[in-house]
Amino acid sequence: GAPRVARAPRRLREAMALRLAVVAAVACGAAACAAYFMAVSRAGFRASELIEVAIAHIEAQGDNALFTYLAMTFVGVVLLVPTTPFEFAGGFLFGARYGVWTAWGLTSIVKL
Image (cartoon, rainbow, N blue to C red; front, side, top):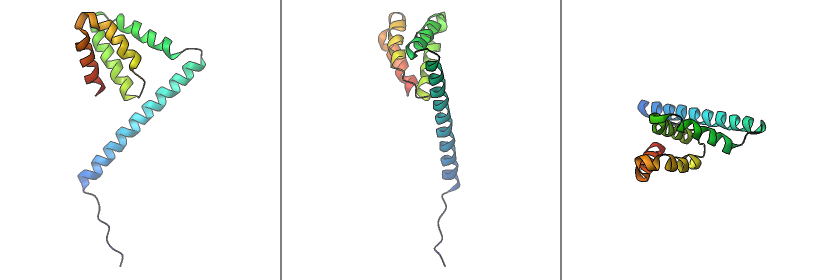
């Protein structure tokens, strides 16, 4: 008869299923984000205006501004949104209060 095909161990199959679910969730998030930006750009908004609004929102958070900034940066990285403007803004917003190296380090950790 035909040779028997070996099946992957159960833990490996479960890990592969979990990885597929995570990739699918990230892809859905990225697609939703792209659709949102396309809809917004058709309405006459520019991405730079959205970033300015996000930065103004971060500034308005007071003592929680750093945590809001880090959360928005994390979400941007997960959804594959370019975060370079946020990184520059973070340096300007938090460099004087926490130090440039601290702001850079926290941003780098969030991007991992």
